[in-house]
Length: 99
Image (cartoon, rainbow, N blue to C red; front, side, top):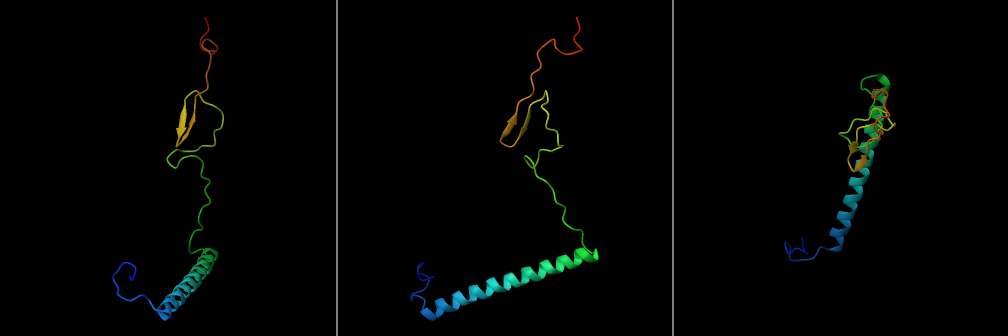
């Protein structure tokens, strides 16, 4: 506030120390609450009150479905900033084109 000229006098040493102590206390309280929450979640998982979070494997872009297919296809595919061109098949090599 003093630097932004919303306050005329600079903070005293006592104010600075009080603010630092307050920040440290808040960090400790946050750490304690998160540990208690983790223990509570673990006990709820064991009791079957809450379903455990599923472990998903993210591949590619979030809006692009992943079906585990790795072989090249004739159709080009695109996911985010990756582009996979389609596989080229020479004309006349397919079994449906018998002359």
